[in-house]
Image (tube, rainbow, N blue to C red; front, side, top):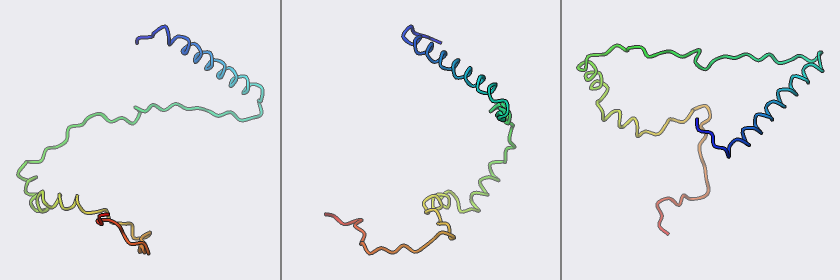
Length: 106
C-alpha cells in the first residue's frame, strides 16, 4: 500500500472522526439505560460460498442430437429475436390519437 504524505491529513481526519463517532455512540448508550440497544451481528459474505465442483460431461453426440431435436442453432437464433411476452395480468391495449412518426423522412 503506497501512502503519500498528501493523503495523511485526510487519513488523520477520518480516524479522528471515526473515534469521535464511536465514543459518542458508546456514551449515548450508557446515558440511556432504558432504551433498547441494537444488537449487531456479523455474517461473513463468504459463509454461503460453495467451491467449484466438477460437473458431469455429456457425450458430444448426445448434446448435438438434443440441439438438433430442438431445431438447431436457427431455433435458438429465432427465439433470441422474439420480443419478450408481456405479462397478461397487466396487459392493456394501447390506444393513441397521435400518429407514429417512425419511418417518415422530414
